[in-house]
Length: 240
Ligand SMILES: NC(=O)NC1=NC(=O)NC1=O
Image (cartoon, rainbow, N blue to C red):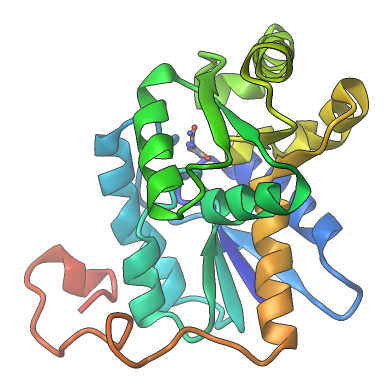
C-alpha cells in the first residue's frame, strides 16, 4: 500500500490527489491519501512549508503503515526527514515530476502557483540535477486553494503553459502544484505535449521501487535519527 500525504490540511485537495494517485497505479497496488490534522490549509511560502512538516511527519511515523510514501506538495517539504523515519521509499512530487520530464524531452518548464514559490522550485531543479533540462519556472499567480474555486484559474494555467512552449522552447510541461493534478489529462490533450502531474509520477515511482524490492538506504545520511528526547508538544504528536 502506498500512502500519499498531502501536507496541507484541505480535505478536498486530498481527495483530488487520491483520485490522481489511484489512476496512476496498477491493479495490485492500493493507495490511500491522507492529510495531517495540524498545519496550513495551503502551502505558498517558506513559513507554510516549515509549519507543514511536523504534521507531515506524524503521517509518516503514525497512522496506517505503508510500504511506501509520497509527499504531495511541490516544495517536497520534509522529504529528507521523512526518508530517515519512513519504513519504505519516500518520493516527493517535484522530484518525481522533474525526473519524469527528463525521460520525455530535452527541455521542460514548470508551471506553478504563486510567483513567490518559484525560488523553491528553482532550488529543487538544482538539487535534483536537472538544470540542463529546465527552461523556466513560471507562475500562473493563482493561490493554491483558488485552483478549485477560481473559474479563471484554468485559463491562466493554460496561458503559462502556452508561453512555456512558444517562448521557453519547452517540450514538456511539469505541473508545479498537487492541486493541478486533475487538470493533467485535459492539458495534455489541449497542448499536444507531455504534461507531467507530480502526484501520478511520484506514485508510479514508488510503485516501481517496491516492485524492484528497493527502499531507502539505511547506511549514512538516511539512517534513523539518533535517539534523543524531543521536548514539548512534539512528544504529544508522536514525534518523540
Ligand atoms: N507550489 C505549490 O503551490 N505547492 C503546493 N502548495 C500546496 O499546498 N500544495 C502544493 O503542491
